Each structure stands twice: as C-alpha cells, then as structure tokens.
Length: 457
Image (cartoon, rainbow, N blue to C red; front, side, top):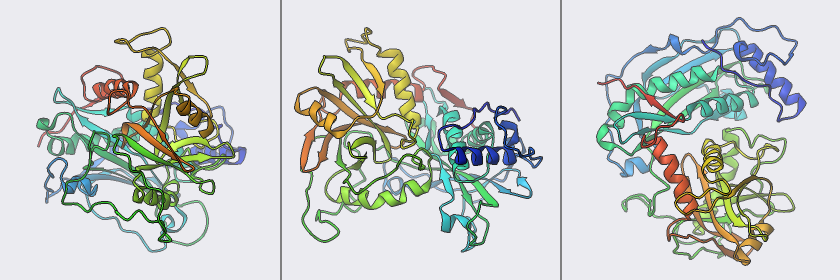
C-alpha cells in the first residue's frame, strides 16, 4: 500500500485529538502522523488493503429502472454488487470482498444500534458525454470518511485504499447501471462504516464493518425536479405537530425555500461533531425538516447562537452573494474553524473554482469578479442586505442538491425574497454549476475528474 499523507488532527479538543491519533496508530499505523506521539506502539495487525479484494459476481442480476421513475425516486434501488470489509480489534482488517448486493446480519445488541457508531459518505459517479465513467474528487470523500470514522472511535484506514475499493465497485457495475446511452446522468455512492460487535457495554467498538454500495438517485437540482405523479403528494394540511395552523410558504418562485430554525433548535455546536459525517447529525434534524416540508419549505436554514449565525441549509452548505455597503461584491459562506460546518466536497470545489476564475478584477463573459469570504455572519446581516437591495443571490451546495438556488428564506415571521437574476437561478450559481458539471461529465479536462476503467459484461 502507498500511505496517504495526513496531518495531525488539531481542530477538536486535546482529549479528542489524542484519542483520534491513538486510534490511527493502533488501526492504520502507516498513515499515523509522524509528528504526533501517542505513547502507543504501532500495531502490526493487517490494515485495509484493496489489493486483496476478492470478487463474486451475482447470479441473479437486478433490473435497471428507467430514469426519473418511481423506483429512482424511492432511493432504494441499488446496483448488483457491494463491497464489504470487516475489522476486529484482535485481527485487524479482513480482505475486502466484492459480492452480490444483499442484507447485512447484525445481532440486536450490535453497538451501532444503540450508540450511533456509524459514519458514511455521499458521492456520485457520472457517465460523461464522451462515454467515460468518472468520479469527482474521490480522494476528498475518502479523507473525510477517515476523519468521521476516527471521530466516533471506529477504526482508521488509508483513504487511498478506500478510493481503490470505490473504483472497483464502479468499474464492475458502471457499464450496466449507467450505460453509455445515458450520458449526462449519475448514480449515488454510499461508503458506510458501522460498529458491529454485540454487547451493551458503553465502550470503543471492537468490531466494525465497512461496506460500499451504489444507488439510483434523482436529480434534485434540476428546475421542476420532482417525483412522477404516481407518487404520494406532500402533506397538504400544513399543520404543526399540535394541529394548529402554521406559517406556510405560498411562493411559486423556482428555487429552494428555506425556513430558518427556531431559537430552541440547534443542529451542531462547537466542540461537537457537526464536522463529521455521522448518522447522529441527521436523525435529530428530521423532525424539523419534516415540519418545514409540511409548511411548504424545502429545507431548514440552520442558525446558531445569540446572533443567529447562518450555518447550513438542511445537510448542504450555504452561500450568499451580496454587495457590502461600500459596493464590494462578496461571496460569503460560514467557516470551518469551530467544527459546526461539514467540510463539503462541493463547498470546497465552489470556493476553489470561484477564487481562481471569479477573482476581483477578472471578468468572465461580462460577470463581475468578487471576493470569496469564509466568515461568520448572522441573519441580521442577511436581512439587512435583502432590505437594502444589496443581496445578489444565494444558493445551497452539496452532493444531493449540487448547486441549487435559494429564492426565499422565512425568518421570525418575515419572508425574505432572494433575487433570481435569470428567472430560475442567480447568474453566479448558474456559472459555478456549469463549470463543475463540465468537469464531472468530461466536457472540461481537469484533475478533479477521475476516469474509471469499466469492466464490460
């Protein structure tokens, strides 16, 4: 294996940092930061090794659903195969296995079922317009999954080995499930790790399972995207949990409509685990999300603290573009330094490509350059920008929603209308989305785009 270079973890408390470094040293010593002392002898147990992958192809292939069908919108139709690899504290990592997709076996006392020891990644693979299969910056997802796993005491691994396993699954199932005649489409990938050891003791996991599967997934970011009419419509009653009438969005504008979180509802906090992609970040937010959708909104705009700092939109990162009172054009998003915000791959890509192609003084087809800013800002600042006509546009970014314009934010009884300069989106969101999509689907050659050699049936 070729170890991936990692730097010592420094963004959490000293105790957590020490524990994370200890986990890496004892479960994936080849990537342990050399500058960090854990007072622990490096483990000699086997590490995750993609070169040991065994393959058993399915004898009962599954049918591929039609695009945008009810099956696709169910987000429950997976490809023919998955990859698994198990880990124990006494034997280390097993040889990975590519095998037919199917159920997992867990005891009722499995650690994950009681203590939320689970993390995952969300990513996609794409059928390019040139006929090739591609991944988009998979190294970023694999490194983030390592951070998530070690944050909740799951075993470490070399991110490069995880990347190789993801490539292996795509190469086997890509040709059938994302055929060349479906150029410009994608499938969703979900690498996952869970603690599997039976027993109710509240302690670090002693057994774990890594598994990777691919799932048919709809395009949430397309104008007018929605399930076919045969699927149930959203709840039309727009009632609160107590049955009382509530504020309902009546906007017919395109774009996402966001409901700002209430003062007593917090998604993540400093020193917590908002920066890790773990299931425990999502379950508690579903109640508020469901209520928002019942009232006609797409997602919650999560706020934090006495100043109502803007953090994330649902499970997506959130951006605003506005003019300062001095007339400077800025693109602003919340920072990563306090551990509240998930370091999204799309977020990072938007920031990097905007800094390189939309810098101040640079004009791209007439677009004014802007300053890219990562800092805290509150709803008061956002509300002032809307009221004073300085708001240019806003959008959410992530794997599922990609780059989706925001048209409305409801905050403390007020509807804040966000401009959509071209009718369905802001011009900057449109340009950023086009640039990223061209890379993902091979229209632009770029180092972020990783071509996967597929195995023909």
